[in-house]
Length: 576
Image 1: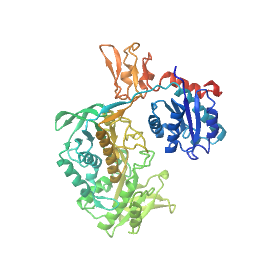
Image 2: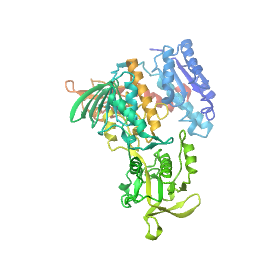
Image 3: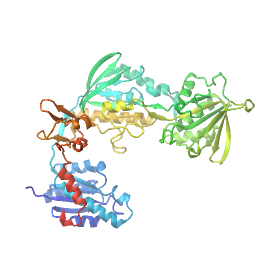
């Protein structure tokens, strides 16, 4: 039987861990365990010197297992696995104990936090003793890519990949390319016509030799895995099968419809319009009421459907700058009009945006602040003697007074929400959604364009509300990721997958029904379930659901999990 030679490393994380955990004491106590050959503490284990320390000890002390007690494995597990690889040790002979997010950051009692940290490290040491070496698995990459959505994000991603001499299939649900950007007049903060940004991109895409565009298109079904996807699509009334190696989802979002909830009188008062409708006015060059009059008093109301517990709690991000843009356009087009910005909070973040806010304030725009918690501004039809069409009743927060704002036209800055077909798209390409129905990225900070399904990326506002600048940046980031895999030719795939013991599989197909990645099929001839290890993500759903225990998850075996639990509950160091 192989001798277990374990190295344990406890990280200070600067003061993130050491301020609440006695890292020196933890390292000393763990060093007393029978199989622990080395136990050290270091200020920053993820740094190059920290990794070099592990590599040096593996070689000098012939370590065959390593435990690092530091931050979340989601942040640096791959970092330390690479260190093991560089030292000639299988990367799966590694276990990480999270004593930052799970201990230091959530406790105030240093003594108790140190005890908990010791327990987590003991659990990791007990578990790593049963780790098994797993071999890498690679697949070849089809150099073609599929981009779903022909808005500014999809166009940008498609061009980045196609300009690198790679094939791109671009699918657009509508009859025209451009998405929501096609409905915008000017782009903030520099007031550049949107058509100057969008027009050249559409022309390049439609004439690009490496891009095949499908309009009025829909995906019927997607099969396969990273590097080897194929899909049945319907375009121009014909069905076609295409093959590709990566998917970029850029399906965008939709504006909130205030008529669905009778908000601000929209749909009842004729001159209450949404920002979408007002953009059309700006594009036409005519700003007028329904009866053709030039409005004297114009109110712009922010956060319609956003930051409101009754509709959407999140901020739609672009509304504040949209309101400032409208105020400037109105002041230029109607210099003698009265313009009111009725806002909850002014969030003018981004390069040049705060400067635009300051400049707008100098153009005789009346800024009126309301508190969402005390209710939204109420709009009523005015009396004939009021010399305006509508009155907006609100409590102005800065002056703490109830006021009435005259208006001949009201522009509602409507929020942004996920598309109706988001659920269908998520199911087709194998991605998850957040509570607000936007698609979820693999990691909000470290991997903002990838998803948990390898080879599938999300860009633009299908991930959440964002402006043109951020959408293009995400599109190019995803394109770079795709091109990197194409250039490599092959890519490593998950090895911590499920495996079926055919001798005890009863053929009930419970695993087939519960697998979220459609990675399990049923072999009719053998009457057993079969795992496609390329599609499998090792989530463990099938393992927990299997009534006979026929499915085992590599790297998460019963023995490993139970030994970790035993380690967590151990009170004496010699018991592990």
